[in-house]
Length: 229
Image 1 (cartoon, rainbow, N blue to C red):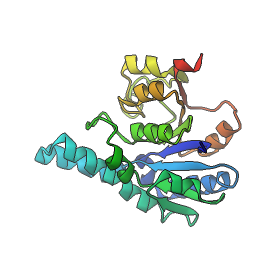
Image 2: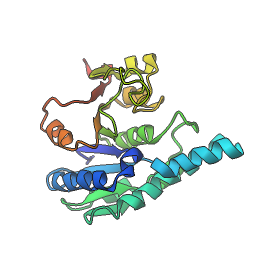
Image 3: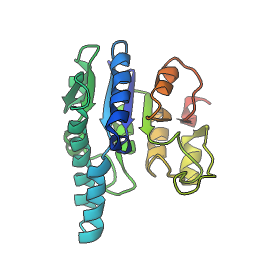
C-alpha cells in the first residue's frame, strides 16, 4: 500500500501570525519537492469559538466534537490562502495523487464522519485526529507542529520553569497524564498504531528540515515501546 513519507499536524496556535505561517509553508513547499506528505490542520481560533459556545450554552459533547472537527476544515481553507502550492483535499487518496511540489491540506470532516473512530470529548483534538489519519494512510512518521518547543512537564506559558521532555514513550506519557502540546488520547493512539512522533516548534521550521535528515533537533520524540525499543 502506497503511503506518505509523513503526516504533519499544523497547530492552530501557529495561525496567530501570518508571517509565521508563510515562513512555515515556504519551507513545506521546498520539502514537498522531494517528499510526499499530508497536512492536517488544527482548529485554532475556530475551535476556540466552539469551546466558548460549549461552555456558554452547554451544548452536548457530540455537537462540540463535530463542530470542532468542522473548525479544522475552516482552518484548512484558511491555510489554502497562505501559499499558492497548497491544495485542499477531502480524501487522503486524493492527496497521494498530487504531484511533487504540492502541499496537500486535508479537510478531515468527511473521513471522521464516515468512520467516527474517536471518543466525542475535549480529550480528543487535532493531535489524535492526525494520529488516526497517519494510521489509516499506513504512515508511521508523524510531526506535531505547535507554538512551543515540544512537550513540557507543565505548561511553559504558565510555569516558565517547566522542563522540556526530550524523549518519552507513548505509554509513559499516557501514565504521566501530561497534556502540554498534545491531547490526552494522543499517547494511547501513538502506542496503538505504533507511530513515531516528533513534537516541534513550528515557528522554527528549520528544525523540521533537520529532523527529516535524521539529525538531533530540539523537540519531543514520542515513540511506542511496541517498536522494539
